[in-house]
Amino acid sequence: MTQLKATITTRIARDLEAVETELKRQLNPYLDLVNQVAGHILFCGGKRIRPLLMILSARICDYSGDDDITFSTMFEYLHTATLLHDDIVDGATLRRGKPVANTIWDPATVVLAGDFLLARALSIAAETGNPEVLRTVANITEYMSQGEIHQLIRKMDIGLTESEYLEVIRNKTALLVAGACRVGALIADAPKETVDALEAYGHHIGMAFQMADDLLDYTSDTTVLGKKVGADIREGKITLPLIIALKCADSEDREFMEMLLKEKNFSARNFQRLVTLLENYGGIAYTRRAAADHIHDAKQALNGLKLSPTREILFDIADFVLSRKS
Image (cartoon, rainbow, N blue to C red; front, side, top):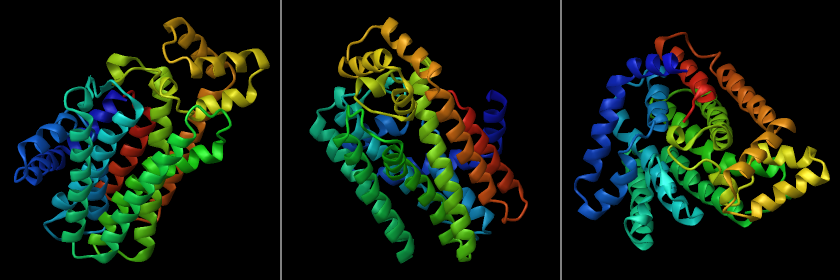
């Protein structure tokens, strides 16, 4: 995984640097407080997968303009806005190894900074002059909100089904990644079949990314992950490893898992017992297989695209999503 990450980083280093510069430039004309709150999370180690996928999708479609870097920032602004809002809703304490923004500034300020980033993303979408791009970004914003609301109303609900879980992560995560790939193809005036192929690639990458993220909450540690392990279950979030384990568990183990879901301040020992149960009942292995299936489908979606260094990078990113540790 380390070697794969290094290979990808080397090949996209110039793009990463350009995105960082443009993210800062796009915020400079606005209030210092907005820069401080947004920058607290925006410039503390994000992977920039969403803007990079937009740039690479445009490149594989032979985009010849000069605005791909600028347009790509809208996807990082959208992503950052959701993180600012989510940390308030979830009562989180750490994000990317730092205290969450709403422990430094009051929640009202953080909510408004997130709202600004959403508006800024829509403004950048409008600057493309392409109604289909604007429609895509507007739909992403709408469905991300629906995904978060769906997750919120089913908080601590052990009746959440696998199909509902998949719908939640499709809306809150996969649509943004798919949209980034779609917009890259749209600004390059790619034919419909190419737009659809790249959007499908992004969808499967997004689904796998969220599944991998949900796994890391049980299999990583705080230092590597940048947030407290076990945060999902402490926040009452029912994710795929737990859904599968609950379905397969005997009555005693199911009762323990239900108890832990209601007890936010559980001990490290009890959390480790939970992880063991998720392993024993196949929840972790099932989620890994599901993520791997999405990565396979993501690569399959690119099969009709021409062989190129850019396609190789897209394949490498798919492999990285599955193997990442943070």
